[in-house]
Image (cartoon, rainbow, N blue to C red; front, side):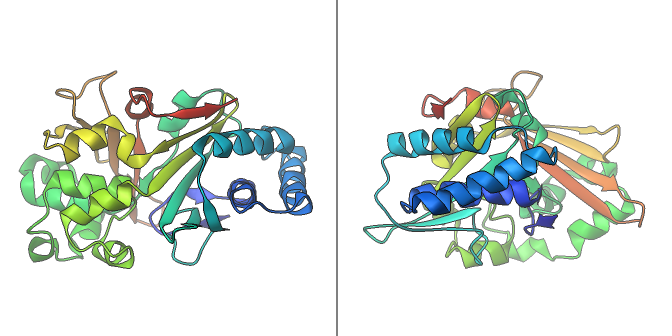
Amino acid sequence: MTRREGSGFSGPQADAVAELIASHLRGGSSSEIEHWVEVLDQQRDLGRFGLPGETVSEWAAALLDELGLSVGKAQALAPGGLGDIEVELNDGTSLWIEVKSQSKKANFRDLTQADWVRNETDALRKLLLLDEPFRDFLSEPTLDGLTTHDAGEALEDWRFEDLWLADVALLYSTSRRLMAGVTSPMGINGFLDRKFLFHLTKEGMRSVRLSDIPAVKDVQDGRKLHRKIKRGRVADAIVWVSTEEFPRQGMIDFIYSVGYLQNDGTSIGRHKMNAHAIERSNDVIVSS
């Protein structure tokens, strides 16, 4: 089982879904597509995947047909790691796709169960500088992880809202942003416009451009990102964020869960895009 830095865990079944979508994107041969269908069927036989490979292939083809991208190249699991799939359009524009494969989950609402980004992020480091109660909730291992990086001067020109957008884009650190050519908060907007979510469950496969997520649009338009910080039952602290109003059940766009203490004494974070954030978008394309 592998894990890209900062992201959730993935296995051969998730990698095969990304490879299958990339094959369709670049107009791969029928034998290439069939190979990845067979890999998924093998994973299904092992109890690790919840859908027939051919179903996933059909959903991906229909979704991409509706998106209508003019693709020159597409590579899954590209070395740059800015997305599960890196795409180059015929006009030279680069796009990225983040694939959330939840083939055993019943419906799209289960997105909340998938990690979006993990561990320390610059948004949490900024929150540490802004919000004293947040610091008070954190255990020593969690605090150590967030303060080993001197965030003060490096993040001086970045608002918490800007860095939350960076987390949505999976550009959660200075090094990741530089890798993507992003050197200022304004640069995040262009990157979000060129990155998509592809989400697979038993309900179907859906896609949305990250810049079309309503909370992302709200922050880009200057709206405040409301937050509620509370002590967690398993994690040190939970941070709910929303652009609609003060966060409450049913009105949460993103959830930071900070400080799960591991057996080895280290602390991890598991942070999630709440299903509500995608549900309130009118720009989601669904194939089922």
